[in-house]
Image 1: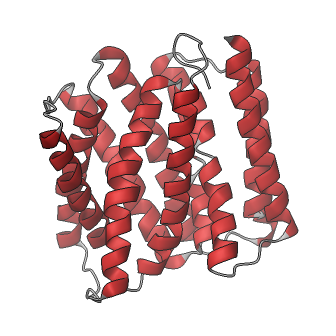
Image 2: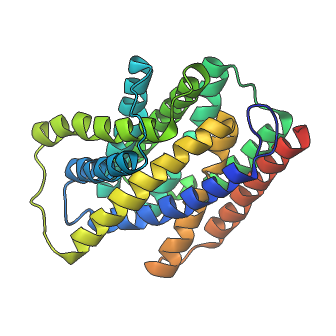
Length: 295
């Protein structure tokens, strides 16, 4: 990886690796919770929990929760924090976790496009090569020649990926213009995420909540690890590296999610899925070394 000054950043690479693991497993958890709680109720609940956790951390560390760049921060909340999660959760209601996560993680492709137009970050030749590898890997895992299942679910997942890409580009713009504290931005994102999702829980009827230990532990993971820790780490990565590198690196999430589904849920990966994972990993390695070579 490289920083904005074209210096390799092994710290950001480590943060991204932890984020990839947390978010990969979260797709397994989200799929398991679809029968226990409504999609919008789940999104709102995880953000409420994440806000409480991060707010407590801010109090303990005496971090000033300064709200900067109001409209940009709101834009990130609308597209990256709310739209991405709500659309993805809706897609999981009608589609398998593997296909949904792959379609949602077309995000890096949208992010490269948005970063080019919004941030002026023209991808390097190495990034483009990694982009091709990753794109081939996604196609191999999705196997569109077999059909994408529910058209509605597929479109929802793709729309979620596009929303996340736009939100990530706006996040990068905030860091370039205002240099906000990462923890402060994460706290406000979790609060805005909960507030903006609440109207959806009222407008669209949600199924009854099935209370019990599975829901408790699932919400604990989604609220504390996937949301509070995961989004904090993600924003830290976005701050430290270019948008294209951050987006491409996140492609490790769907690859690892397929492996988790294989090991935990017994979803045996096909030869195409395995080849897709290899291609995605090749793309990640290419992007990483492209940044180090430029430096």
